[in-house]
Length: 243
Figure (tube, rainbow, N blue to C red):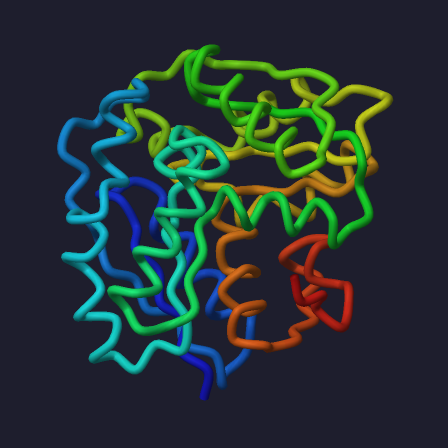
């Protein structure tokens, strides 16, 4: 049994995780601990506080007791707003607190983009434009070119969590560009897992979504190789590349 531990901010799109667990197989367990987000706002100051060391450390003990083999901070905006170096420090502190291999959704996106062999991506963000641009900056620091960013300007994760399939698909279509190798939907508050195959079929290219890449990153940390086409092109490549 492989146990993957995730620290998830608040409550919004977390039901993607049991869905992923069902698709991965019976010997993989997905354990989710909810962190206190403080103010639910897609603002840089609020997001920095959401991902602060003391908030993440509060959930670590529960994951350790659950027997997690690795831990991932399941929040994109709450990691990339710290910048590349700051996000690395965030992960180092999390690994030290947990005594486990650790990562975050932002780094998961960088590794997943490289795993599928993409060089240029388009971003469909629920965030306000200034926050979405910080994600593009983060990707650039990881060696990934963003051809365009589409921002929806949603302020709270709670609102994002109410989005329907039609809204998710509209965002992906709006973000797609002919010269993009993949489309990225970076918010873990967004329910996407059930829609990935349809999105990839419609756009004709890989679609990477936050909860999808977060679990893939947990598997990477645990050195597991899983083929699950229902989770998109990312889960059809074996073996998983170790960074």
